[in-house]
Image (tube, rainbow, N blue to C red):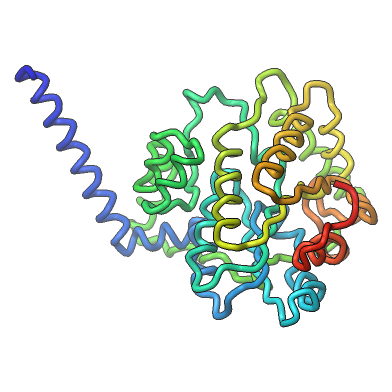
Length: 345
């Protein structure tokens, strides 16, 4: 090795050590704790860690899951199948993707006792991508921990992204910078997420014209994410989903994959020319088959209309109660009883 190569290596190692020390200092500081408390996924993980009971039934997913699966209805419908009170926890949170479904599953498995059942509530936009892989990197915390690295690499997450389990990506640093400066300037810290009703957040019904306008706007936004020649399935997001299923199954947890409900304007994108959704549904069927778990496409389940949504893909409290009861009684209860769930797949 030449002297210039040694000097370059030494400079690189020194820079990495300095960055690592700064990252560790921030994470251990009060400022780091405040930033973590404001981060939705970190806050959600904190609520899970502080639960005073061991949940028998857990829900993983994004905001569709958080607003769409009523923990009270789950408990009422599934307690008879378990022969005991079935405590439920909804771990749904806005911003969740296939990447962070894995971190949610890993946090569940850190509990003293794994749940009996995990319902992974999916949405198409969480498992696809339109950005070229060489340009797409983490811009938001995925709730990963250093100990998650083997699971991330097994799932096919790129090394650069997997290393965000140890520290922030450059994009995340830039996103945090303004907030960090405001905290240093004496701004009050934000509030962690409320626990709501065991993780479930009910939404009130809205007028039909408002719901329709919101649904059309969301459908237009989703069109850019789901339709077109540049949109494709995300191998590492699907890999994280499969690794989450594999680890839950290895811990003895029964797992169900569910494509979450959507209003008619959003659901229509599944049939649009150039839509990636048919290919995604086929990929999910194949994933479920490999892992030996059921997959149900509930994009437009019976009994729900657009009046049951607050916008394009979030159920109001009445729709959530009806959908959760139907899902639990027709699909989840037989799964817990080791029977074949009824109804269309």
